[in-house]
Length: 138
Image (cartoon, rainbow, N blue to C red; front, side):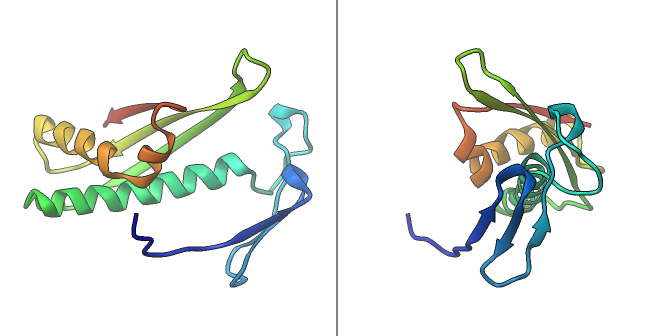
């Protein structure tokens, strides 16, 4: 693979700590969500960060695939829902639901675009076979 871009983020303190990117742009305090026994509050967590990255990446991949297929997108949006839970093997796993809006496209064309994008998106490729991803066309 020819790497086009790299980034670096350092985490300290785990889920109740901090993440800081090498360039200082990302600088967040983290907290374990209440649902997982933590304090929660107005702080982020790894699942939110993963959901944000996956949603943004998938939306860009939609535009890329649409361009390759000469499909004009009026707009698009992707809502990523990320869940975490015990995997039944002593560890933890993630589940992802991507809800995609592609207004102005016929449903069949939109569904085909959605499926093709899932084969192109780097996040989809990274989790394939490890994380259940549900694709929902709105």
